[in-house]
Every structure is written in structure tokens, then in C-alpha cells.
Image (tube, rainbow, N blue to C red; front, side, top):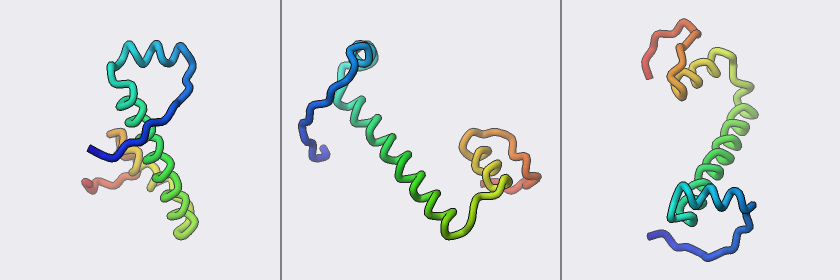
Length: 82
């Protein structure tokens, strides 16, 4: 098990009520939500850094990324598989 630190977090009452409906392990649920947000922010920073070094993503690159992430049709005309 990973090292843990006990902290106090203040949440609106309605959020706590909804959390209790969803899980018996609120700490685990919140830890996963924090981990997901941290990954999101780190990815955003990496993407920004990439664009600063290599220029902005083209519409074709964005369409390909959306296709890979969401399974949407790749409208770039490329038939290469990932």
C-alpha cells in the first residue's frame, strides 16, 4: 500500500451525501478523483510544452487524436491503424 497522509477536506453537504450513496470508501474515491485531475493537468502541461517546441497542432492531428481517444471517425483521409 502506498504511503498515506491524513488530511481534512471540507466539501459541500450535498456532495458528501452523494458520495455516501456512491461508495463506502470516500477516501479512496477522492484519492482517485485527485489522481485523475493531476494526470489531466500534467498531460495539459506536456501538450502545451510540445506545442511551444513544435508549433500548434494541426486540425488533422487533432482529428486523429480525437479518433484514437473517442473512436470517432478519422476524417483526415488517413487509413493507418494505431
